[in-house]
Figure (tube, protein in one colour):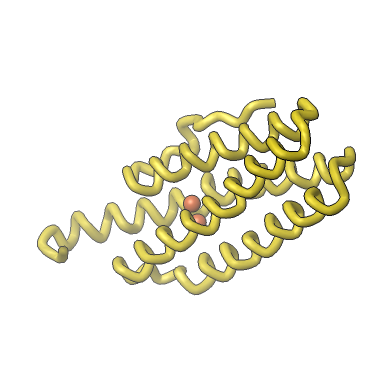
Length: 140
Ligand SMILES: [Fe+2]
Ligand SMILES: [Fe+2]
């Protein structure tokens, strides 16, 4: 099943939304490669991109949290860090063990967890940034 950038994933922050769209596409590419048995090379390149772009995106989101002094940034960043560990674990297992129904399910589960994070946590962060900018129009 393809993941979609549905309206409930839209945070309203152009930078964050733009990166989330890339993430959803990366998740679809990895999921397609693994589900359609596209071979190890394709699987490795899509998964490697998903893992590395997730890290890049989290770093960028972290910078925004610092810039706007997001009160929940510590908790949010800790979650990002643990997610990076988890997605890399799945990536490494897939690389070393090859695909299996268990690992396919694990990857899909991790992707769904990320989508839930976008829906529940990143929308909160973007709402905070939006409010901050309205209250401090000359801040930056
Ligand atoms: Fe995000
Ligand atoms: Fe986040």
